[in-house]
Image (cartoon, rainbow, N blue to C red; front, side, top):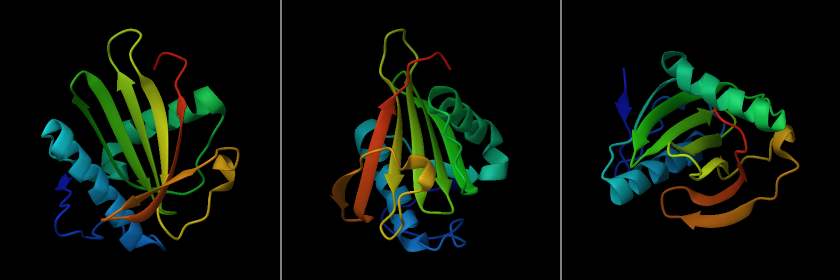
Length: 153
């Protein structure tokens, strides 16, 4: 059953097993606020097992594009389309959030984004990426990186 992510009353529901659950909940809420403000989209998540197609799509893109396999278990995920862009998010137990932005139109923007919750280390499988810092009222300091998707997915 989908859960609406409340960015006014941040909850760790669904993320309790993460050692950085509060920071990850803030990161998830930060994404929900962004989509509400930019697209008037209500951001919902499902348990990873219930959103297996989204988790598999993100995992396949990571593996096909860069040979990346995330070691941490996925806790929650979501997939939706907004403004001609197919979006997917996976939130991992380690505190990692991965999103895929895939413009449906040919020659559109397509990228994978990584965000690290405050308090977590850079996972070994992402050690080759440089992470920039950004401040968030909801999530504290977020470190982020990305790569452009080259193939068709």
